[in-house]
Length: 358
Image 1 (tube, helix red, strand yellow):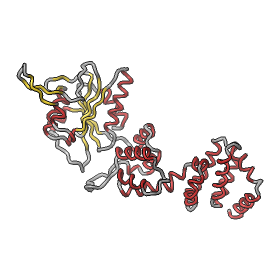
Image 2 (cartoon, rainbow, N blue to C red):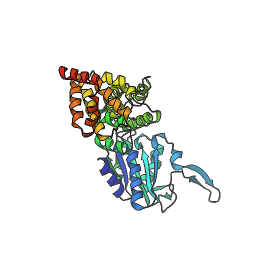
Image 3 (cartoon, rainbow, N blue to C red):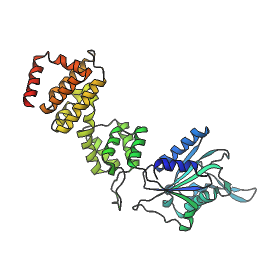
């Protein structure tokens, strides 16, 4: 199921029916469940709680709570964990992730919640849903669940597409370079199918988001030339992809931003010069710059940007420059700027050279 189908089922399924998501690790299971609680809260006008309990990291006491002797009744009770909902009028979702990586003792406690909606005699509030998730990756160490219990859950094969992930990523401000890299390399969004090498770093949707957060937090971009960017990329998504991402930033993504040309040409001058060795790249860049010029209002008060545009044009290979010149003359705003250049003798000589070479 895709994201929209999964969210619709999570919202419409009766609360007393437990749901189990089957998906690869890192595809955004918990993010989707959290989004559902936000949508329920918005639609109902009431708060909707959310607790994400990672069962692979839990011991049985993390589920059942701490034992406490009731001296008056001479019985042992359990102090519930923070995530156990106590308000019987509240609503929310208990999300038990990595169910098939939990110990048997933990599973027994979780089954009581999932299947009986109670824990040690204490009822789960009727407004709360229980959603579990299992990792379907072949390479993961998993615990086989009793087949006899399978029909106690509603099962969802959660398989969001790369396009859905990119749409979500743009809405949640994932770094634009990460989104565009995945757009061009959709096979790298998830880890490869099959047995994975122990100790090797593979990409996942979760690691791409973490990598994006690191890029933004550390202010890293293609101008980072001390190897830090490559090291950070390698640490999140692996060595091979780090090399690809660095090349992508240098040769494709970063040089396709016309704002860098117009606003800060000196900083990117060396990269533009390198891009001029690839006709397709620099031609795409010139088209983007011309489009940007005609979207902006580069009046005479924008002298720096007008100067940067001219320097960029003078650097272009003759074949690309001739096409750029025609495009600049064809734009209502850009034409006014470039017509002034012809008053300069050096520029006229340069323009003559372009026409003779093309």
